[in-house]
Image (spheres, rainbow, N blue to C red):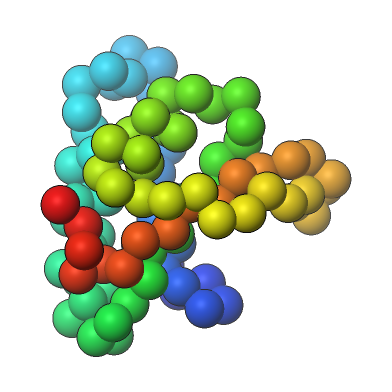
Length: 89
């Protein structure tokens, strides 16, 4: 988890051999208490490319809500999901 402009961005990258084992959800769940401790009321944010259906599914399964579609610095589309850290279930 790292501070972004108005939220705490959750960032992870796993080798394909690790996909499907629940590690992404575990990282997100572990980041919530840290973000909340550092900043009460913290907003968690997950950014992903629209075609990354696995990342979208993880974010949605944890209750994160789609907020925005935008272009990144290289002009590639990305989706933004957010949820207050205290609400992460």
